[in-house]
Length: 134
Image (cartoon, helix red, strand yellow):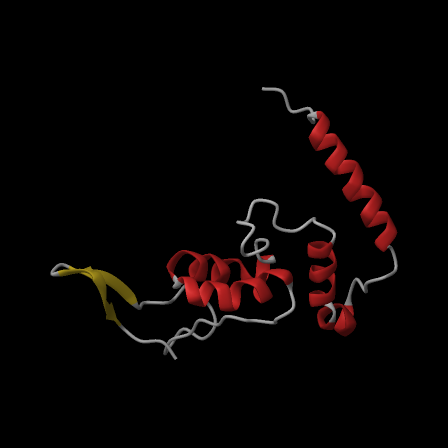
């Protein structure tokens, strides 16, 4: 297997390095201001063409890591109307989202979750949920 960059990959790497060098000092790297401006960083990456290179063009780019499951779930299971309404802002960083999981006795830790969903044998589009979320 050849792990060397193709000419196109080398050109992309060069563009990204040059762009990153030009961003030095523009965005905080820690603390409260860093957290407050994460959306700005994501928007800058998206505007420069360095975010979401494999996502369908009609929606923009894949979400930043903190939204990956939410974007993937909505992209796969949401209606076209929901995808068109919510994905662009989630993807380009102009809307802020969060996701939370919890159930009695589990808190925010995903490991002890016990709620399950199984397909209804009589209706293949329906799931039967055992347990509950809060």
